[in-house]
Length: 576
Image 1: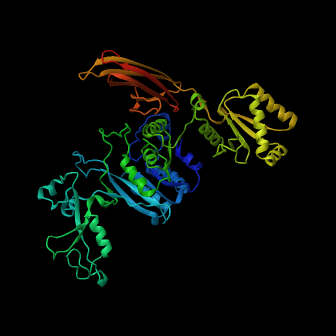
Image 2 (image 1 turned 60 degrees about the horizontal axis):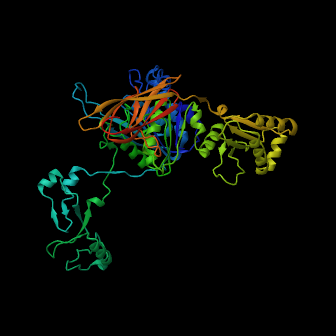
Image 3 (image 1 turned 30 degrees about the horizontal axis):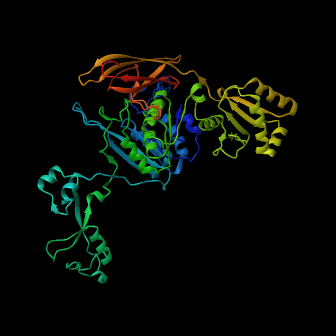
């Protein structure tokens, strides 16, 4: 898990294990009568979307249904699916896709999200300001955690009317305070609850501090009453003949239960910090609610239409495992940047699976992570532990040992050591492979030297033993990452004495450049954390205080390969 995958989600879904995901959220392209508006504009997206609606609504529903069929298979029996759509096809999606696959009995909610404000130009109908989110479970036993929100205005005005100040003084709210809800931060609000027993309880008919017991006795024992008193949760009336009440503090309540109309989550606006420039970006608060209600920590969240990466970014922050799929290079790379920006020392690692890979990046990757990854790409299973395995890193589906060397020009000595290890690892398996004329072991490296190749040939010719040599390029396609140059122009000091610089990045790649990303306070240890995630031109203007600075820019090409360039600056306030 924790993987971003570039590719057609239908084909990738078919490779996933059945009953493996706890929650699936999908925000597929909405159907409309006009041609679909391409968002990212890269080749993968255009190729995927250009003819999707050529057959009209029936074509769209068929396209969506075959993907939901796979999602239903991938969901665990206790899992749930949330499908995000708008009015163009919502009824068709429910009847012909979701009800067909999940069954009407497993329909849980049609959630209405008020995503936008009304427009004054709506003359012939009410403005459409809502999206629909269909919530289906796979069975009648599913994960659901009740969600709570703020209180209604009427509740705050009419219910929590008592104010308790730090010195213990208590009074009722004034009319002005009720209307404005302008209450000091250090003041606690509460309402009162009756502590009388609903049924006669002779054993709980006792006086407390001179106050008589209710007609049927107290709801609580004397010991509990004393504990509540010590906690300051009893409200004593001025008159002794009055009734002691229980304080219910507002700050101790869970809030109102969230229903199926969500009007408390704003759409992404230009001023929001989480905005990345993706036109249909969904707010993180929306995904937080969905993920928290339908999964627990450690559960697996799948988003097969990754888009701007909100689902995986939120899932990662909420300590879920996750998997994101998209046809667009930009969707994958922007999601990677979002994940990198929010990561810290305790964040679990994640993998980005592209169509092609850069040699330099693979060659310098963490050795253990690379071993696990390349073995998985080969179709094998990596060793979880790194000790007591005779130096072997994994095995194929039929048990053949695999060793990985993250190096070039592997020599004869590696073959000798590998040969010795596989004999000690499983002698019977070794002998069976030899009899069956199958490889006794598989060695993966970037390239092999003459001595290694000759020794493997000698073993086969003279001792009837096969060791298979596999290069990384035979497993995953390797390409050349783009070239990048970075320059800046000094635009002088602004009125506040800040140095203003214009930055110009120029990338070159045979497959074309997708976009640039910028980090104007780059820290080598923390890694690249983008201030600007999507720059199609490669030009930015930034202001700097006097001092030392590191500026980094990434360029991403059409295959998702990237190059990083870093410039160190010393700004003295006069010249750069």
